[in-house]
Amino acid sequence: MPEVQTVSGVAYRTFRDASDYRHLARIITACARGEGDDRVETVERIASRYDHLDRCDPVRDLLVAEVDGEPVGYSLVWWDQESDGPRIYRMVCFLDPAFLGRGIGSALVEWNEARLREIAAAHDVGEKLLEAWVNDRNEAATALIRGAGYEPITYAAEMVRPTVQGLADHPLPDGVEIRAVREEDLRTIWEADVEAFRDHWGFVEQTDAAYGRFLAFPYMDTTLWKIAWDDEGVAGQVKSFIDTAQNEAYGLRRGWTEAISTSRRWRRRGLAKALIVESIRELAARGMTEVALGVHTENPNGAFDLYKGLGYEVVATWTTYRKPF
Image 1 (cartoon, rainbow, N blue to C red):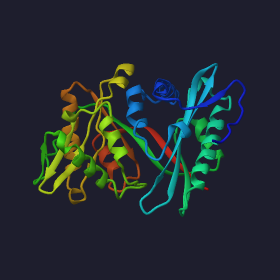
Image 2 (image 1 turned 120 degrees about the horizontal axis):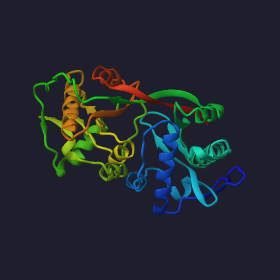
Image 3 (image 1 turned 90 degrees about the horizontal axis):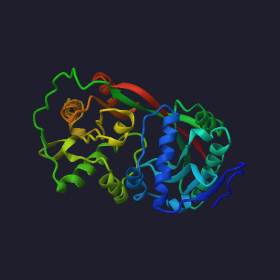
Image 4 (image 1 turned 180 degrees about the vertical axis):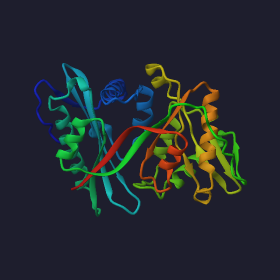
């Protein structure tokens, strides 16, 4: 394990066990609030991801920063192999904004890089790249990452449609139908979503651990999903959910129209638009008054323009940064 840069009054330790999840959730929520982001993390959502990690051992790859015995920040590293592309060594870092300006963020990023270099040293592969992503509102994090030599590569956005009213009709194209989700269809639906994203930027082959994360998602409600089928299988999908923790914390009635994908045989035929409209109406029937989603703004299939055309507006942006070893 790499050593950590000394910061006065700060102690570091490795991950213990699931009892740390409450600290990680609190730190993420505080960090988001400091960035003007209304994300609210929960123990259950942390568990759904960290109990099913790929290419990451939290006991060795997660570092916690403490002040007076209380966790105030943490970082996590892992790696992914892009299909027909470079091996990517990734990091995330979260810090309670009450402890900004003390050098903790710099120490965590420095440790992240050192740990990733240890991991990469054992990999006999071609191109290797370090990666981090930052909320563009977080000026301190942006300056830190840029100062460490990272270059912006691509961009993502959170978009909100501030009303569920005013939707034009967009009927399903002929040849597809929406069916209620059965438990025995879950793997098929998940695999169809994975296959649909195979030609997207940065695609990584998915594993059983990824399927475990999918099943463990605490807000999964298949009665909200709109899954279109044709004679060949899943034609397109929107797997909506309601983030009850966020809604309660901020007094929202927001639904998320997420995990939107279309089989290649149905692209550019209006299927995604029809499924999104059906999803918004379903969420409205459950009492939601606005809807949101996340999107890669350089999506090769025009998703960003599709969502803008449906009335979604950008409320936050993120930049992905990379640098070579």
